[in-house]
Image 1 (cartoon, rainbow, N blue to C red):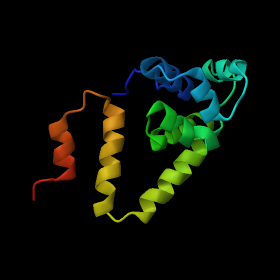
Image 2 (image 1 turned 90 degrees about the horizontal axis):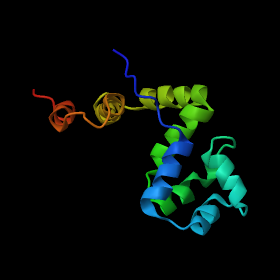
Image 3 (image 1 turned 90 degrees about the vertical axis):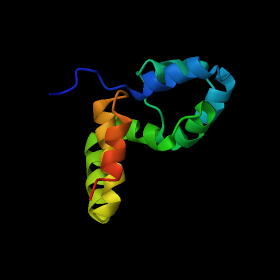
Length: 127
């Protein structure tokens, strides 16, 4: 059964995190390498895309995982590219090394209520 929870957008994640952390707007503007607060407003409303190259500094400023932000940005801005990258990454991993990313994908799909016991079982299956 598919989840009815809508996927979060990069704009909604960044907006919520700015509110949660109280990071000064000047710091967010610097992280994004923009000068105009109106540009940030447009980004947060979803009218203008975030520049992918700014995600590492934005993630640092907002204390977020850059890989997660990049994944959200690719899913939103270039889903075919994300699918290609995911396919290539899986092809490069050995079966043993796939356990962690596959478990992570399961956690993302199940949401925050995913059982820690289930995660551990996936990482260390009984032999």
